[in-house]
Length: 301
Image 1 (tube, rainbow, N blue to C red):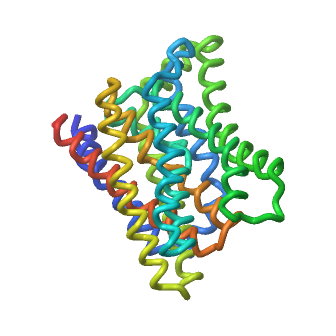
Image 2 (image 1 turned 30 degrees about the vertical axis):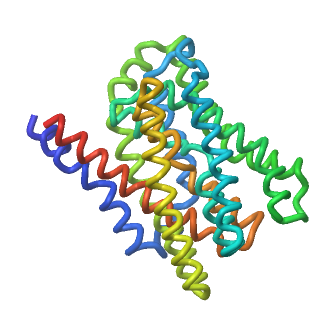
């Protein structure tokens, strides 16, 4: 009992602690980067052990969030384009980027529907895989990369990471139900794995910003723009989620982004300095997530 109480008290501070350690030990953390995809896989597998295949349906909320993700990103891009193309691109990617693969984990911790969020995560990532090569070439991305190779690269970056742990969880539910049930009863493990993953992501982002610090003014503007759109996406997502029956799914589906993929998109298709926008988004979204988890733990206690 004392152990459970201690864990509940420590949990709200683990994400900020992971971010702080990521900043302090950013150079050493680079050696852990290859383990990040495996951590995400394990984390999603544990979370997906809670869901059933029959529960996966694309709802009106999914279409509403996807519309905001695509149309909203383009609207913000054209609004910022007169000021700076790099700023417009960085902010566009922060909105257009798909839902984070870890979002179902946080949604479950906050009491939202893991299945609905997992469904939207798949829809969001597939939409980005299909649309990004066309949009990126239209917006003046790297012309040396073909549409087909870009589509395949993005598809292979995100889809297997979502579908593979889901397939494994469903197979275990069917063929090894006792083991599956035991795993599904230990959902808290996902949170601690996520904390380690966050430490790695923050460390990598800090290392990149330090290496590319020559354009300080535009980097500050990108960080501020990513803060604004991060807050707006959580807010708008919550409002639409509340309208369609799950405000937590709406907020996390629209606000929690696959920032690792977003940074890769900027580095691959645009001026590398644009990656500062999604790199800063890593901090903003996890500050918001930490606050939400803190409030959730206080309401439980």
